[in-house]
Figure 1 (tube, rainbow, N blue to C red):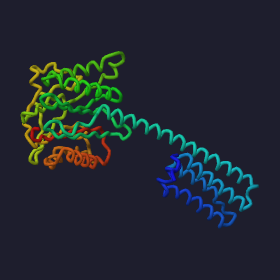
Figure 2: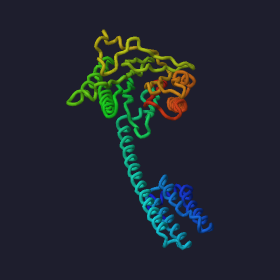
Figure 3: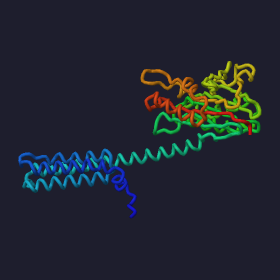
Amino acid sequence: MKLPRGRPYRLLLARPKLIAVPLSMVVAIALTDLLTPRSIHLAPLLVAAPAVTASFAGPWVTAAIGVLALASEVFIDVHHHLMSNQDVQAGLAGFALVSLFVVLFAVVRDRQRRELTQVRSVATAVQTALLRPVPEHLGPLHLASVYLAAEAEAQIGGDIYAAVRTPHGTRLIIGDARGKGLPAISEAAALLGAFREAARRRAELPDLVADLEESFDLTCQGEGAEQAYAESFVTAAIVDIPDDRPVLTIASCGHPPPLLLRDGLAVSLDCSQPAPPLGLGGLSGLGEPQSMLASFPFEQDDLLLLYTDGVIEARDATGTFFPLAQRAALRTEEQPDALLEDICHDLLAHVGGRLGDDAALIAIRRHAAV
């Protein structure tokens, strides 16, 4: 037999132990009142039953418990011949009024819960469209990615990442938009769109960075945009990994340096002259564009870890930062997906289950060329 799909039935099936609590209260209070002398009147305590029900159930279940509790009080008053008492009548009216308010509270609470569920669904859809997981395999690379939102209700923020296949290899970006609210999401969307378009047609990384800077500037222009984006910028690291050479090249725009994991060591790949974050001056004052680049060996079975500062700036209860390099160095032999799973587990344990900022990570292992 198929039960109706209404909310009360789902609650009765999913939470029978919780429903038993107010029912037990009604039975216990009613029996106690019936078995005690007439001078001891416990029936008004029955109003606690619908109040308790409203804390976990919907309005229909709450109303049903309220009606049951009110009927129990009427039965008790009739049994004790108290219905003609005006104080008892006033008490019953007050009982009904309180129960009504409790049901209205459950209605409002359920409506807000549905709205929050819809917002989460929209956020999930936007995140899926904007921040797609990187492909598991691109050429000789095995990849994995993860995004951890600081707020459970807001599953999308300013952290970004993407991977694009080019004729000669793979290009990746990871970044952190420092704006707030919708401007940060707008910046992230514009930057990812510009990267996915330009990464394939720009042969040189400095030209790609210049395109991203121009895209960011265009996003921040327009009527009313200047104030909204006044304090906005994006830190980013762009990585170029050719298929035919065991190297990688990084263009850093004020972003934390990647980690190269090999033989139980985690080496920070620092650029000697990084570019400023996108939105804070572009390539001006850097001299030769090639000066922003740094190349490092990236051989077979090496593991590269890209991350945003939400990872390394996460603090525990004592204010200690999360030791990403130390934890990653213990797992240089793991595959990218297992590495990220372990790091996320350690990170959430370090902060007690709640991040103070969004965090994103990408792990890349080079295998034999295909």
